[in-house]
Image (cartoon, rainbow, N blue to C red; front, top):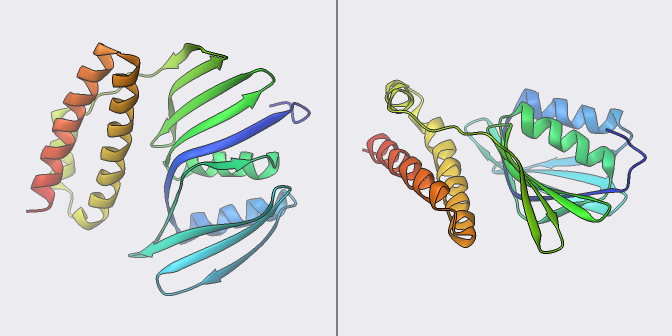
Length: 201
């Protein structure tokens, strides 16, 4: 990516689970990029204070079973160093996010699920254009494999994130009157709901 370009990032519906090793790696990457960071640890929270060109940002993470959950909505990031490090670790930690990248007169909306870009939409004024879409359905084999896992306590929080993401996708599809996506999201939600009910028994 050309670092000389005028870019502005905004992270919506960002949800990432870090283990301690990955969290430390992200802090180190920010420091190596020249970003000043400090942190405070509490029994139930981890606060990462990031000093960006936008000012001081407090990234509050919940601590649960040795993991750290970063969940924020509507965060503008003008500091390109921070934006690129955060994007890298959303991918690395298999996180979810909707990332808006403003480039000149258009906005690219990247929908990231499990660290992979599943959809890119270009917005110019009132016009929207689908640039990329990855089709991926949850199969019964995947559901059965999930049910066989012993770490259901770890799976349930992730499953809730999947449900939230698919509900957001369904909402977007309803607004766009995209019947194919509505049908697809409804099927995925049925399977996710079934898995959730079985795991919570």
